[in-house]
Image (tube, rainbow, N blue to C red; front, top):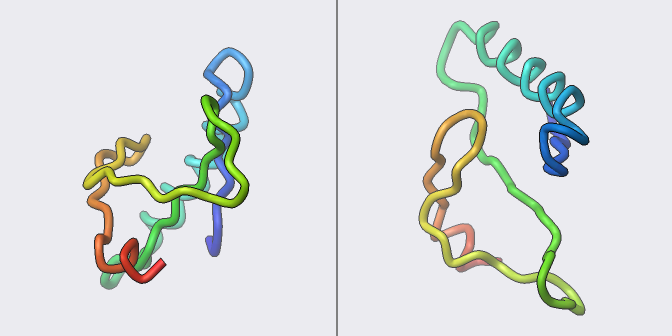
Length: 80
């Protein structure tokens, strides 16, 4: 798996699609017999509350995902 697009519209609207996407990711992780195959995860999402002409970076130190809570790489964030 080189990339994953997982919708976030809510289980009622996109649950089956999101479940399939994460099922494929979990399957790829289980096939890995050596060190973890994931180096970096980028979480991209729209702004639901304000208009952005460009993009914004989150100040969060941790992001909750279906795979568990993930630590944010603050050095990568600073370089962006």
